[in-house]
Each structure stands twice: as structure tokens, then as C-alpha cells.
Amino acid sequence: MRHILFGLILSATAVNAQDDALQALNAHFQGLVVFSIDHSDRLIAELSDAHGPYRRDMAYFEMLDTATFAFNAEEHVVMVRCKAEEAKCIDKEIIKTGAVGPTGRMSLPVPAGDPEGAKALRLLNELVRGEQLALQDGGAGTKHKKAR
Image 1 (cartoon, rainbow, N blue to C red):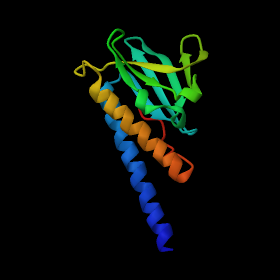
Image 2 (image 1 turned 45 degrees about the vertical axis):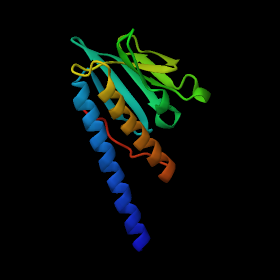
Image 3 (image 1 turned 45 degrees about the horizontal axis):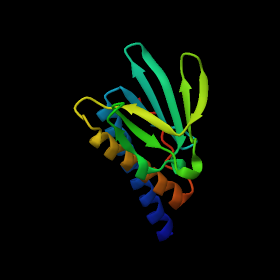
Image 4 (image 1 turned 90 degrees about the vertical axis):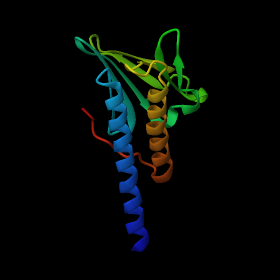
């Protein structure tokens, strides 16, 4: 009984930490990108402009490689990449047309006040690593609802 209670407490703590990481990420991107985790434990990044959402990128956490997340100065974006063995693990949906295609990277605009994307990269790494650990430990992620 004591082990079950301890496990429940750890699980609740992990969910709270991931909720905090998701909220911090969304606050940092200031609506430019809205991140959420769907019921299939996928990272969802919905990109918007003045006219509303225009693209949605979706990827399973376990297929992302945090060691390759980087800032691209030429494109002025933060890049989230797949593991080498999962070459095209990201589904990119163009919302206006509904077209969905696989790709190997998620290119995210850099938030204002973060010129080289350092904070964005740190927050993305925290969220993805935390979710990957939750998946390894319990077999299921933290199952967040859409954050808006």
C-alpha cells in the first residue's frame, strides 16, 4: 500500500512539473506558437500570425532528439529535430489546406526578447526530456489536455 501511495505522489509531481514546463513554454512564445500535448502523448505546436493559426506540427516525444535541438541564425528559428533512426517523425499540417506531410524538423519562430533562442531551447528541452522520462518510467506520458 505504501509503495502505491508513493508511486501516485511521484506521478502527480511529474504531471505538475510538466504542466509548469508547458505553461512556461507557452508564456515565452507569447501566442506566436501554442504548445500542447494531445491524448496520444504527442507534442503539438500550433503556429499563428495576425490572421490566426496557419500550421500545426505534431511529434511523438520519444522520437525527438533533444541533443540536436538548435538555433538556426540564417532562418532565425529554433529547430526541433527527430532522432536519426526516426528521420521524418514530425507531421506538419498546413491548416488552410489540411495537407499533412512528414518532415525531420520543426522550425519555430524565435520569441521577442530571445534573439538567439537560448531560453526557447532550454524550455523545449525541459518539456521534451521530462515527457520522455515519464514515458520511460510509466509507459505513458503525463497525458495533458490542450493548453490554450
